[in-house]
Image (cartoon, rainbow, N blue to C red):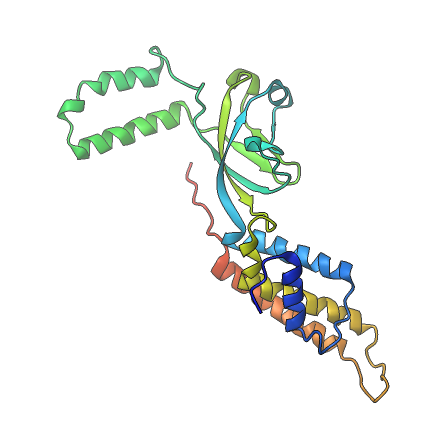
Amino acid sequence: MAEPTTRQELIDHCLRRLGKPVVDINLDDDQIEDRVDDALQYFAEYHYDGVERVYLKHEVTQDDIDNSFIDLTSAGGVDTGNLIVSVIRLFRIPGDTINMFDVRYQLALNDLYTFGYLDLIHYDQYMRYMNLVNDMLSPDKRIRYHNVTNRLHIDTDMEEEFSVGDFIVMEAYRVLDPSTHTEIFKQRLLKDYLTAQLKKQWGQNLIKFEGVQLPGGVTLNGRQIYDDAVTELERLEVEGRLEYELPDDLMIG
């Protein structure tokens, strides 16, 4: 069989791994859909191929200034819903420029005449020095992003720092939409995790019939199916964190 490229093909693939159609898999369609949603959520949260780094442009509005936060539901001109999982940093705002009377401008101007006499070592030291001055006099804005409300809070006086029409560029991580990026359905971790989730739900459904003898002397062992699935899920979650999770960003400030 070909690799799954749609949601339904992924479901069929995982059910076959559990024994269908040779074995009757006692699952309701709604239960299957719920477990698919759980598996896709896990994949987006812990697999580096479940998200992408994006740069979003936002034009500041009067509502942003009045509310003291930015609604990222349609950031970058795209309806993102709750697809943005984190905002890493803001880039320098074009309107936040320095003038000739600014301390940073004067420091740079005073040292500009030495450019012609600098070798690479001194040039590197000079640039580090200017970056330090810039960080001290004009530090990056502190930001807080809430995934549930989809709001970006900038810890500054919005009315003083921003004007209507200014642009903000944000570096963020956004969940990939499986319906667009169908390669997600082929990922081994997703297939293994969904199979284990379906197996766990199947075992949970059968536990209520544990000990009941069917015609022919067959006894359903839902507890064993459930326990095996739980063990498999624990293994996969450890594997996902160790092998597929993005490393934490190191921030110094």
